[in-house]
Length: 464
Ligand code: HEC
Image 1 (cartoon, rainbow, N blue to C red):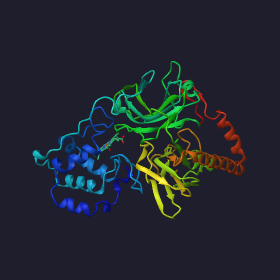
Image 2 (tube, rainbow, N blue to C red):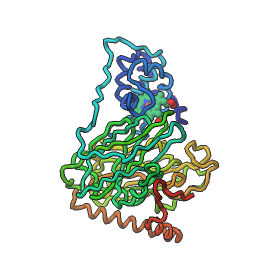
Image 3 (cartoon, rainbow, N blue to C red):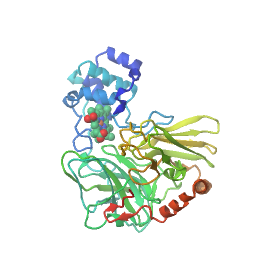
Image 4 (tube, rainbow, N blue to C red):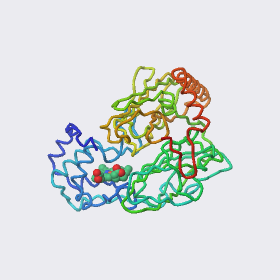
């Protein structure tokens, strides 16, 4: 919460005019809180307390003023960009100013005749009856206290046909302890070996091996979504569903047995999606060596689109000492669009950002990705005290990082031109990395043959 000290310039002209008039809960505040907070802050959802009545909000007024001013809440790490994101949780400057003014004015309730009703939250599946419902084979025990837990669970699905996923909706059995989830397809079928036997369900680990397909991300308490019309993620036949859950102990022991609803497309989409990572492979080829104490170790990568594309989502990934991420697109006209800008990365709030509308990027557009890490002692998220040299790897004390753009080729017939260019880039990056450091070749060989990421029943082997 270091950004609690955010400068007061956030209080814009809107703030001044807002503070002049009386702001009441019933008129201005309830609509903001019900739209931007109560989705998570209500009974049965992820946040630790409800914000569903005047009394609830008034009781925590001072804290609410502080955490909204610092933009710790609502959790939303993307700064305003050139694109609009779907379901943006960020408060507008005006909403923020109204909240601040209301708290300053003593939090009046206002005219009961103007009260805003709490939205109805439909029970059951938000997206309708799923095509397939699966669940954890066994419940996982989340202890009452202790550090946050990141754990991967494998749900054997094993369909006989290839499928295309349009949405995933999850129903945690202990929602207060589930902070967020990342979904994957394990095509290889090897991860289920790591999650078998009589021991604790699941296995520890922050990143899954190469070849696992990303199926999206969900932050506790948020509305699930279908992908845009005509977009679906591949779920090849035989794949298992892998879910990485982030648990936040609640002070009370909880048993979590997640139920997952999967929504398939009726048919294979005409255009097949792709993703472009910058730096490539989460920075595997970038020669990541983050010296102890370095406050802004930076890696950049670029890729020029060989064909027209329509992008629909962007996401970012790093481990604990990630600091900021950025993706820009420079069009052939010279115009630069900011696609994603995360100035304060927080590993605890991973998010995917779907665009409100498809972002058309013409052939010749240059994508520039940048990831910055802070390996200093002053980074409160640094897992090592004192800081140590950090290299690329899949364990929590290792790092990786990239920004990923998800897109469709504008014409399916041109998809191969794009995959050929991406494959050529991967080969060049790999060759350059080995030329720079021959030992990297051995490391890669171990990694690709599965020697580096060793799984044992119930637990992932530590490399420390
Ligand atoms: C996506 C879910 C989500 C949304 C939306 C959300 N919160 Fe939270 N909130 C949480 C969670 C989870 C926590 C527990 C702390 C954490 O995990 O960071 C929390 C914690 C808090 C806290 C306690 C902070 C502390 O330091 O103890 C306050 C106050 C708060 N939220 C206010 C708000 C307000 C006001 C809004 C809307 C303007 C909001 N939250 C929107 C999920 C959410």
